[in-house]
Amino acid sequence: MIRFEKVTKAYPGHPHPALDNISVDVEKGEFVFLVGSSGSGKSTFLRLVLREYRPTSGRVYVAGKEINRLASWKVPRLRRDIGTVFQDFRLLPNKTVTENVAFALQVIGKSRKEIKDLVPETLEMVGLSGKGDRMPDELSGGEQQRVAVARAFVNRPMILIADEPTGNLDPTTSVGIMKLLDRINRTGTTVVMATHDSGIVDQMRKRVIELEHGHVVRDQAQGVYGHQT
Amino acid sequence: MQLRYVSSELGQGLRRNVSMHLAVVLTLFVSLTLVGVGVLFNQQASKAADHWGNQLQITVYLCRVNDSSAVCPNAVTDAQKTEIAAVVEDNPEVADYHFESSEQALSKARELYGDELFTGENPAITAADMPQTLWITLQDPDEYEGITSAVQGLDGVSKVRDMREQVAPILESINMLQWVALGTAAFLVFAALLLVANTIRLAAFARRKEIGIMRLVGASTLYIALPFLLEALVTALIGVVLAGGALWGFMYFGIDDLSANRLKFVPWIGWDEFWLAAGAVAILGPLLTLLPTLVLTRKYLKV
Image (cartoon, rainbow over all chains, first blue to last red; front, side, top):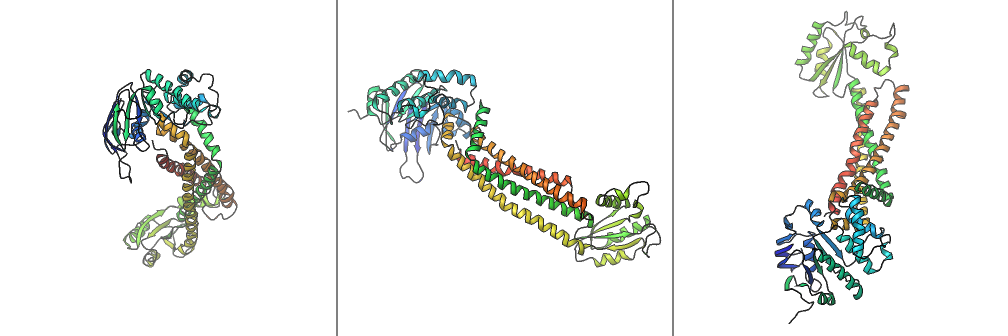
């Protein structure tokens, strides 16, 4: 589903590349944690998947497409196959929960009927039925992140990318969000999650890819956050 | 649903940035009006040149029936006209020439003075009263003596009229007004472009969250840019309508009044020229806002 072949990404003005000749393969339906300290290259990895950047060298394949050769006008279509969740939720403050989730479908041209069917169904799935008319500032942090997950998943993408989704949440709420991501993963969606949350990684026992200074230093099935000796 | 979204975004965008949009509309209004006025002056200059000849033209009046000139015992004959044409053609000072018939001269006069003198059972002026003329365009405005003297003595020639000294200052004034209008318009057009650019920057900043989310969920570039383009189009259309109204006022209260009641001897521009100027303004207005919007949305809304 996601394949990096000898991928290097260097930013102009930086002496060391953010990713240095890495090769990674993520299968369809896998759940992968991307761990490592700040500046290790996690965010660059995710941005390359989203085709926000092109690699300096090497090849990136997402959903069967070599995306460094993808024409700019085809990028929006690629992104419809990828849902994205961020640490800071990124909800539109002037829209209700339902409108926030529906927005993701509206802007890609889904019909009113599809939106009417999919939005309540997804809100129910993330545990927010009955809260569709609330504004984001009337919700707790965990609930806001659920809205963000609903928005990312409402179009039923093949891949869900989560960049520190529990970074702003307390441990109990974080567990709830992880259960939700696990549920989404069980529907066949590939989940790639960058995190610093060792408790969660240790608890979930999923594949762990650890980055350090742009290199993959560990790629372990059913791994934990820290190095295992 | 998409249409609804785009129209609601358009309404929000116009409201959110109302002072900037107003600035764009007003600048466009004034600059487009000046462009339109420039076009009208340009038309006025060529109209005046058509009637009086331009800075390179002299007019040769040919003899008519009962000509008051002593050198004209009879009206000019076809043979004499051929002879005159041959002389003109051979002269190195001449770039071009053409004959104007009595009928053409009559219709020009009629256009200028109205129908009253020319219609009815016993019109005051008929084609026979109008002399045939020969319009000579010079190679060089300063070299006209050779051709003037060559034509002057020919049979069938009543007189040579060189009105350039009278016409030149009028044409120069009209041209100057045209360039003042277009020059001022150029500065204002530049200001309008800067304002459009700033408006888009502000709007893109105000909507950065929505735009960020739209990009992430896979909205197309056109879809993201559409509200911006429509905003640009709406401001342009308001500017065009206002400028069109101002030009209409200029024609109706200015030119029409002058041509109908005063300064009747001048061949004034009419509504055909107004529509030409309005057309130019209607094309230029949307271009002025849509082109920078297209360029800048590509920059600010890159996927």
